[in-house]
Image (cartoon, rainbow, N blue to C red; front, side, top):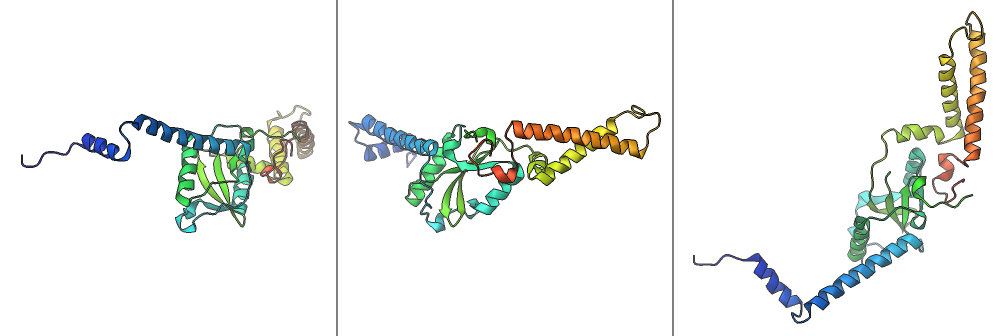
Length: 239
């Protein structure tokens, strides 16, 4: 054969010799790993301890438009699905390697150090002061946030429907009414009188409504629960 085949492994070794001093290549590679590990530790420390929420100085032309979200959009999603939008220092879950890698890539691309990390997640994933699918954001200014990374499992398909009843007092009242009506229909006919009539049905319904309302109020006050509109950006457990 006139021309020998190209051995990629040998080409890689040749390239490595050009970039590394062969007599100290182990130390050089180790140094690179140590710098990477140190950078990752700094990112994790920033996420866990929190820092300033000053806008990050992005290069606008390099941003992914689909990842830019206004605070009003974030607020609506949090209220609809009963989620919280808080600083990452309150997050008690673990940050995956993919999230750290995404942060590093953005910092290298834009030549900046990201600050002001915030996260969207269910309340149970936060360490909240006593008074499913995380999304990591950083501020851009003018109430806009840039989505850095998302991980975990998707939310339950009926979460929005279920959480609708907890958006406001009026919605909770509708839930109380429906539950009371369902229980009233479950009461056997003739339990309180020989003949069932409208008056008896209304009396039973009112009794059930007061009972269910009492349970709801007790549960709400005892556990410090509040409506979606009040907790979406609150760091307090019983806000």
